[in-house]
Image (cartoon, rainbow, N blue to C red; front, side, top):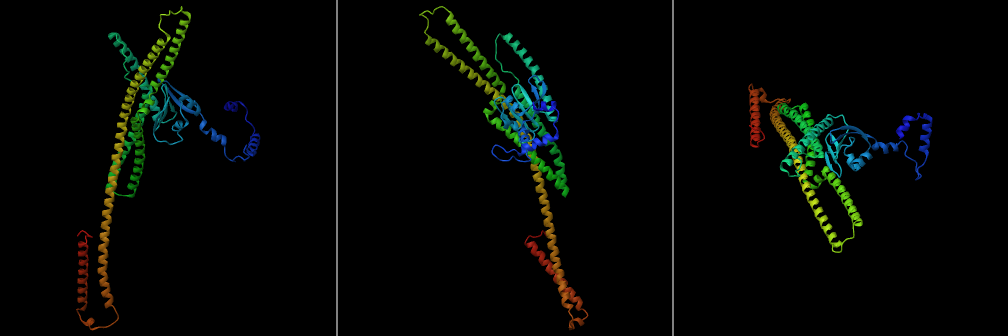
Length: 443
């Protein structure tokens, strides 16, 4: 209504708007405190209540784009606000599958939808995976509709041939399971495609790093490992969610919306039918002739009616429990199929992570080997420097400004040079022998 007024009424002058805003800002609240200046409280209240565009797909594969606000969607699907918050694209939540009384909330990667017994509601997005999901769901629904008609005709022919009316269970999944299957397939396919792309990119890069260790290759491997960790976390969350559903029979039974809807409609129709029969029987007793005293007393008829109702209720409960068990088995088989797919994707990522860890260990071994070689070379260089320092000491001693008779001999320089060289060589060999004995250097 306010939007309609804003479109129909002429715009107000800026002076009137400013005066009204100043008056509202200067007006104190009921508690006597001044309102916060610069804070748009109305905007904060209406931020999460705007209309959102949804894509609706019904059981007949008809699509429609609708705009519904949050409260209308809560009333329509009987969901709390926290479940709709999981579908909000402004928030980042891990993959989740929740079974409620009248809907299934699915948040699997790009697929964020609400599945009921009659329709699927997806957030309208330009993502290719969302559009593929809608197209795939339409194709599956049309194909299943044709198969259902063919199965009905075949069952009718079998019934006519055998003259026996059999209550055979349908060989197709209900609407909500088909929608959930396509969502699981889309999520598993998307994650497996990302894992394959990462695997194709990782192995040549790791082989190049082992052959040539450089800063550029190390940076590329670091980015690759961060992407791998993020993708592994997402795949692990989807796997844990499917495994949690498979381990809990109550959650799987809660997700069978078509059965609950049929059960509710059957109970309502049964109650109306029994009330109508009771009304007719009462009318019949009031309008019929007087009852003979030989007839059965009213207590026996009440007991008979009570026993019949107990037997009927036991039969209905047994039939519903058997159907629930069969439906749980169907859903468990469906979840198990995609659990195998997502588990293989997780194993692929785990093997890739192990290969990266092995490459890192190999690189660390190579770097340690180079470091050890540098240390050994530095040790040899230090030993040689010490030997050369011996020559420096001898040259310093004989370079003093004094005169002795040894300087007058013609072969004195040769003797000093020979003795100093032999002494230095012996010292160098002694150091090498010490290094070998201590296993500080492979000689």
